[in-house]
Amino acid sequence: MRRRTRHVMAERPSVVEALCWAAGVILGERQARRAVGSRAGALLLVYGGLGIVAASGMTNKAASGSERGRGRGALALGLGLTFGGYQLGRWLLHDRPSNEPSEPLALELVSLGVVVPIVEELIWGARIEPAMGLAVTSAVFAVKHPVVDGRWRRVLGLGLFWTGLGLVRRRSRSAAAVAHVSANAGAVLLGHRTGRDRF
Image (tube, rainbow, N blue to C red):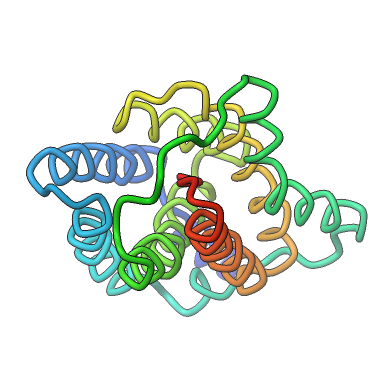
């Protein structure tokens, strides 16, 4: 039993490693967004590279692990925050989408709808959150976005969104990944449908 406990603890990322991943994402995205004229193109560049590095170092347990026995209420709250928390936070802080989507639908679907959420699950969900906990990770994840783009009124919504994903992730990492991709892809489609960028 003691040997197994040591093995599981060895797979948990350290706080230092988690901070390095967070810093790498923030710095990489800031530089790419400044150097590349396309938001979707910059995200594909940064998250594609980070995703390869993150996936190459994942163990099977770290990639698929979850905590069983969580109540259905927590799962329902998690799904509610995943699909509604971002919008609620923006509404509370009077942040209304006003700009039209600036890039083609297909490019945004691949970038914002698929690559970004999958890599965020590999990095924030599997490497940062296990070391720093859900509350701290939600806060850092929320602050990371306006550090990159300067839009601070999204902080509350982003924090609620990640908290929701974390609650789902405690039940199933796969379910969190599916919910994350669905929420992002849905936001892309809605943005193009309404002519209002949801990101």
